Every structure is written in C-alpha cells, then in structure tokens.
Image (cartoon, rainbow, N blue to C red):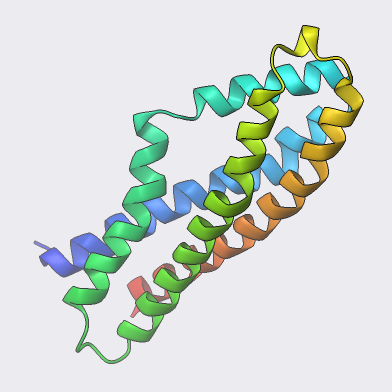
Length: 158
C-alpha cells in the first residue's frame, strides 16, 4: 500500500496533467477551430465555454492540482531529491493561477459583459480585444501547467 505522501504526489500529478491537457487542447484545437468562424459565432461560443467550464470537475483539477502539490511539498519537505521538483511544480502552478486570474478571467468577464453575441454592435472589435491576448496567455499557461506536470512526473519517477 502506498504511503499518504506517495498518494498525494500521484493525485497532484494526475490533476495537474488533466489541467495541462485542457489548456493544451485549447491551444492546439479549440482556438484554431474558432479562428475560422465569424465574429458573432466566436463570441457566442467563447461565452458558452466560459460559462460551461465553471463546474466542479474543472475546479477539482484547477484548484486540486496546486493544493495537492503544496500538501505533497509539506509531506516531502525533508526528502532531498523529490522536494526541489515538487517545489518547482508548485511555482509553475502558481504561475498558471496568476496568469488565469490576472489575464484570462478578466478577458472572459469582458467578453461576457459585451452581451448577447447577436446584439453586439461591433463584434469584430470585441473579438479583437479578446482573441489575441487570450490565445497568447493561454499558450503561456499551457507551458507553465505542462512544466508543473513534468516536474511532478519526474518526482514520481524518483
């Protein structure tokens, strides 16, 4: 039977991988597909996605990953080879959270505040103000969350 610290490391790694995979999927498919739709469709779909993602399953991974990583760090604080990797994973997690709360969520809120896509007076302007920065910063959080996942995988291998 695995120890509690091994179990928290495993769960931290799984939840981190799920979130990194979600951000990766946006980067390599969702946003590329939406690039090809008209402005009103883009706004409507992103508004719907931003509403749909606010659910317990997403929260479990998005909050669970960093929380479990922090718990793992405390449990492995004196464990030489694992501790620096878990610490690095936590730093990457925090970076992902900062980007999400400082950039992506405010952009999502601004898009939502534009109102019903069918009623937006200048959908091209709304889209321009959202799409480029959102995609850019989603790529950055894809990289930070993937780096967190890599660190935790490496810690598991030790």
